[in-house]
Amino acid sequence: MLSKLNKLVVVFTVLVVTGCAQTTVRHHQDFETVAKNVQSVVILPAQVEIEQINFDGDNTPLEEKSALIKSQIESIAELKLENESLQVIEFDFAKAFEEDEEFAYAITQAKEAWEAAKGELYEQGLVSEKEKSNFQASLGSALNIIADKTGADAALLVQYTGFEKSSGMIAKDVASSVLVGVLTLGAVVPIQATEGAFIDVALVDSNSGKVIWANRKGGTSADASPAEIVFGELPDLTWKSELAAPTNQPVAEESVSPKAPDSE
Image (cartoon, rainbow, N blue to C red; front, top):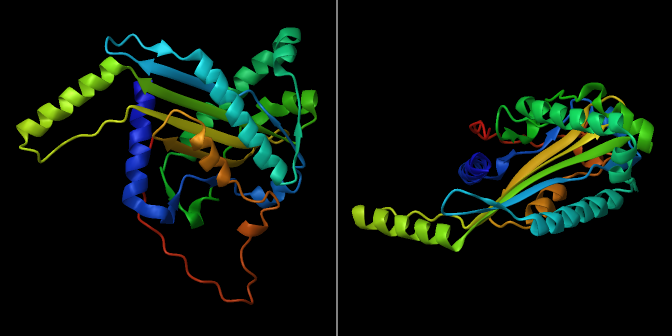
């Protein structure tokens, strides 16, 4: 959990330093072609883990809050996809897992393939708007069984990690901040977040395995707000807003910020 928190802090730092000229969004190089075949999406059960960080290091899973955030994230995703005129297929994954062990194992393999693909997708950290389509990440045949079972053209994968600090941990942070302030004569007064979250999402073609679109965001509260932001950057799946301007019309040159350090 702490390593996830460190990643979240790095992401925020990079966003502040580089400004809005760079992005966490990723598109497949063939997204225009692949998107034409996407008319329906199934949302895989979101992986949501929220913990309370305790003073003694024995962290406590916040299961009720995790279940609540999971439901909220899936509702946000469904609404956004439907707003893009996509059919969101309702599918009882829990029942399917109980009845078909092979299917359950295939989903596990798909999640592992996605985890591996993140290395390729985010090796460069933030990228410029011009570079966000320079990716060929694929989960291979891992999602083929999802296409067969659900009939969906694409699958949406979501992973969310959040934390809340206990009162004892917050008091420890405050004491540390006061001490640093005294030792540095007030020159340095660290402010440590009392809660936060990090979300990863990917829209994957269930037949080819190509990662059509992916995004990740961090937030300073352990709620569903990072999901609102991350899905807010899902463009029209006809990709009309992403197509290059006609060659017979002038195109404004886009400024590109320097590469951001790897958030991984």
